[in-house]
Length: 347
Ligand code: SF4
Image (cartoon, rainbow, N blue to C red; front, side):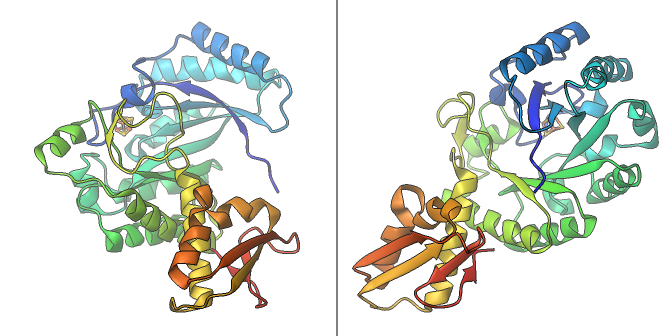
């Protein structure tokens, strides 16, 4: 299995953004810092990070996040990439990645970055539905994402797509359509974020007026699971579900409302295990007795659920006296042995 790169994060809050998208407030996410680092500042940040993480086992990449990288003035793009490229030339890091809007990927912008060791480009696709993109005030179309993806892949970049669940105007049907269109683009990976109401975002005003109701956590988890299963079924890695837990992003601080949970991705996988056991057991009845579940050792927390929630729910739903979860290293991580039956798959 290829190991995930270790990321040296360089946040560029709102740098290069043509306007503020409805759901976004990068300053809230990054604790109020805005603007571009100087090349010298970037070198210091990266060198400091590398010093702190001397014993690295995975390849390291410098990642520019939190803005619209290819929307930054061209001279700044070149200065930042040149400073980052020095670390690649010295062998200290393996490559560079950045996130950008789909409509900034053009022949001109790709020519600009061609000379630098950029490995991965992440596109903020968010949705492939025109109505949802319009309501989110994205200012780009699904066709822009399609075109950007194609151009990047033709030039050999690894492409990641960022999607959102629970945007205004979205629903399950539109979300699954988005998922299917994304499958057709064959990205190298996706990230899925639930829509949160961030303080200071345009969405916060809609929420306060009562024009937007965020998804309840359970609904957001369920919808994300549908996308997760779709992508896994097509061999597309989902490298993150939910925002990174940090001191900057906590309910009451910068999140006014919405399905925020520090272990959102874990909740999605727990829901997948719970659903798979339910389908294997059939309609809930009063089975009584004991239920024995076997899973790969790494999947025991996924099967038990957060705080044993899934074990408790199965006991309540089916009337089991006891639900036992045992480790079985002969199973794959997504498999579950339910009683003495052949294993079922959670995704
Ligand atoms: S979503 Fe991206 S392009 Fe839109 S305001 Fe936020 S960082 Fe800028």
